[in-house]
Amino acid sequence: MQNQMFDAYNEMAQGSYDALRRLGEINMRAGERLLQQQLDLTHSMLEASTKGMELMTKAKGYQELMAGQAKLAQDYGQECLKGYRSAVDVLTEARDAAAEVMDQQAQAASKNLQAAGETLKKATAKPAA
Image (tube, rainbow, N blue to C red; front, side, top):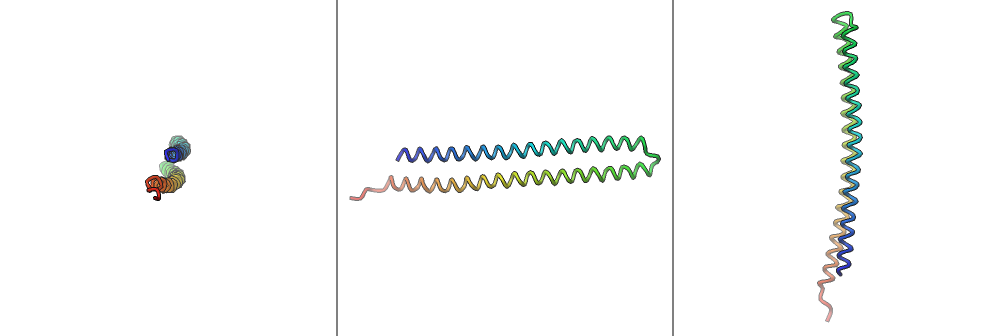
C-alpha cells in the first residue's frame, strides 16, 4: 500500500517537474523571439531617424521635406504594425503551447487522483468475513 502511494507521488512529482520544465522552455523561446523583434524594431527606429536627418539636410524646400517625412512616417508605421502583429503571433503560440501543457497536466492529475482514490478504497475496504 505504502509503495503504491510513494510510486503515485513520485509519478505526480515527475509529471509536475516535466510540465514546469516545458513551460519554462516555452517562456524562454517566446522571450528570445520577442527580444529579437524588439532589436529589429529598434534598428528600424534608428534607420528611420537617420533617414529623417538625411531628409532634413537634402530637402530642397518645405513641400519636399513634408512629403518625405510623411513617407518616412508611413514606412515606419508599417514596420511597427508588422512588429506588433509578429509579437501577437509569438504570444499566441506561447499561450497555445502553455495551454496544451496545462491540459495534459490536468488530465494526468485527474487520472492520478482517481487511481489514488481507488487505492485508498481498496486499503480501507473491510476484508470479507
